[in-house]
Length: 244
Image 1 (cartoon, one colour):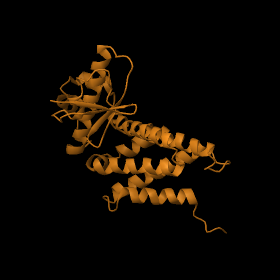
Image 2: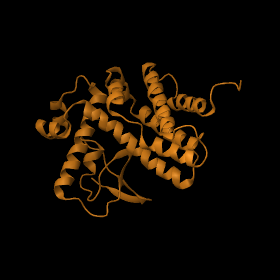
Image 3: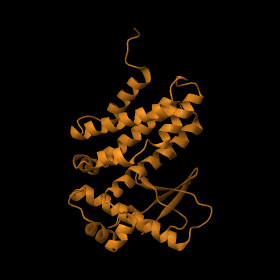
Image 4: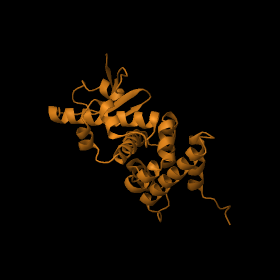
C-alpha cells in the first residue's frame, strides 16, 4: 500500500489504496493524524502540533475502522440485517470492542451525520476567508450535502426507509455549526434582518434540508437533490409573498 500526503491550507490530504476495511484502514499508519471524512476520494485530517499517544492512536484507528465497516454493511445488506457480530468481523475486532466504541447501533448513524457536519465546518472556514455572502456559504453547504447523499445514496436510502435516519435527526443531530457561523457572520455583515435570530435562521435552513432530503429519498431520487435544496433556500432568502 502507498499513501501520499499533501497540504492544503490547514488540512492534510492523504490518498490511500482501498482495501477490505475501506479507506480508514489504509491510513492507520499515518502518525499524528485523525481521519475525519472522505471527500472526492481523499481523506482529510487536521494538522496536529504534537503526536497523540499510541493508545489514543489505536483507539481512534479502531473507531474509524468500525464506523467504516458499519456504514459499508448498512449500504450493502441493510441496517436492519446488520448485527454487531457482522460489524466486528468486518472491522477485525472483537464484539465487545465494537460495543465499547458504539454502545447502540444507532450511534453509528449519529457518527456518520457528525462526520458530514465536520466537513461543512471546514468548508465554512474557507467561505469565511474568501468573504462569501451568507447565501453563498449556505448554498455551498447544501451542495456538499447533496453530493454526499447522492454519492452514498444506497446508504442514505436504507437508513431513511428503516426510519433510522429520521431518528438520528430527531434525537441526536443538532444544526451544523457551519450553518450557525454562516448566519451569524451574515448578521454581522448586515445580510440578515436585525430582528431575526441568526441561530433560528440556521435552524430553519437545516430543518428545510432534513425535510427535502426525506422527500427526495422517499421519491427514489427523482430529481437532483441540489436543485431542490437551492430552490428552497431561494424561497427562504427572498420570502414567498408578492409584496402586498
